[in-house]
Image (cartoon, rainbow, N blue to C red; front, side, top):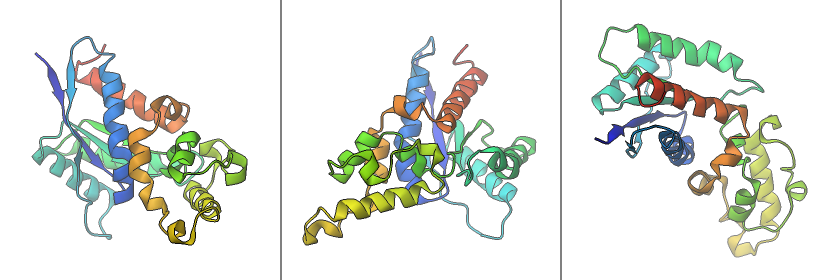
Length: 223
């Protein structure tokens, strides 16, 4: 009998969802190939952002876990940007308190939890596959000319770096096309096409993938 996995995804914003949705599913599919039995990975369930800016991290996390449970989600992935050169603070101040609140709750909640914490921000993952980024930008300029000639996780503001590379590429374009190129248009196609092996060179992605393996072990899908 084929085992099934239904994954919920809670992100910080809509662009994060567009970028991460395909990556998360493909990562689960990759790990499923390591299992001895066949596993079917369903389409992800994007969870509506928890409302109320004054609510605590714990309250928002419990809300997501309840929505996930009601949606039949088996594994809930939480995305937060590290906003730093390491993920230590993000785990200490946001991820760990959120997960502890869910685990300790007596309510019917989804309690198989995985953190997705890109170093600095999600856009660092977009820079993992620079050839793909340049292809989506439609440019023949090299990494140095575009200002992307560093390791992705070493950029303090990777989103700004991509936006600046767009500005450089715009100078090549006709006036008609110049203002059509925007960073918002890159999230989904790059998320769908990005080479996972290149993502695996990033510490934060490797940590996420190992968390997927550990969750599969808890479900007795992987030994």
